[in-house]
Amino acid sequence: MKPIMSMAMTLHELLWPNRAVAPVHSDIIERAYPFFDSVWSGKRAESWYLSFLAVHPDYQGIGVGKDLTLWGVGRAEEEGVVASLITVPGTEDFYRRCGFEETFGCARDGEGNPLVSLKGLDIVWKWPSQKANNEAARFST
Amino acid sequence: MARVMSLAFWDDQLFGEMIHPGREEYPNDSDLYWLRDARVNFWNRHFKFLAAVVQDPDASGKEKVIGIAQWERLGDGAKKRDLARYDPSMCLFLFFSGVHTRLESPHGTGLPFVEVSELQSWDFLRDGRSAVCYTIMNINKSHSRKPHETNHVNGYDPTRAALA
Image (cartoon, rainbow over all chains, first blue to last red; front, side):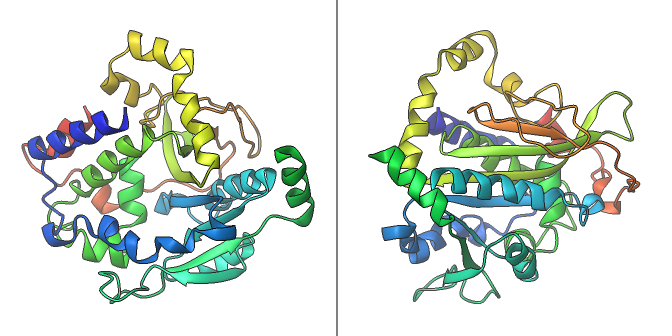
């Protein structure tokens, strides 16, 4: 279904163009990923990755984002894999409080990366507990 | 859902300033970016969509999305989720409903398979499918509409048409 939906959305874009977008940057995410996605390899290959988190501005600061974040942290813990995400400036402390204490890699890395002029974009990680690791290993054998 | 994404990333250096420099002139159009992205990701079984909802203060009896998370499973674990595409319930659902209808759930979340929990605090309903929906009860914070949340576009409004 995904390829069909991709084609449908291409048609959708022709019918209802996004007039607010900068055409030169509309696919910048897709162009940037190859510069840094190698960090999800080796022991980091198995991961629950928070692709997007958004909370309505009127409802920020009451724990909604934290609980949506902790869902993936919990799932990663269950499966004995690392949880990961890319921070935006100003969210680093929030994610640290959610357990993402390790920084490894950055979405601005790589020569020619179109995101190089931006700030932040650190890739942060939350490793599962040793207990979760043991249980995951037992399950897989 | 797309509106929440637009508002949350309105001032973001990447999704706001860089990708949507015309967002003040066309305040509803950035919704299209998020809508199309979410529709494609939704059909990728590696993704898990979460939606947080509250009772809509502007529409009695209806719910309003206030938070969205898109989690993606990477690695070999994602392949197990691929197998779930052959879930018979998915086939039945596709047979009886059009794709567009399926993406516009009664809860207005844009997510099918939405389940609403009547919980006093946060909890998660894990059904192994693509979306989980939470209801947040007893929120004391009042909702105030942002200027750019209203419809600034006179006449033809592509976002409304796309979401209809």
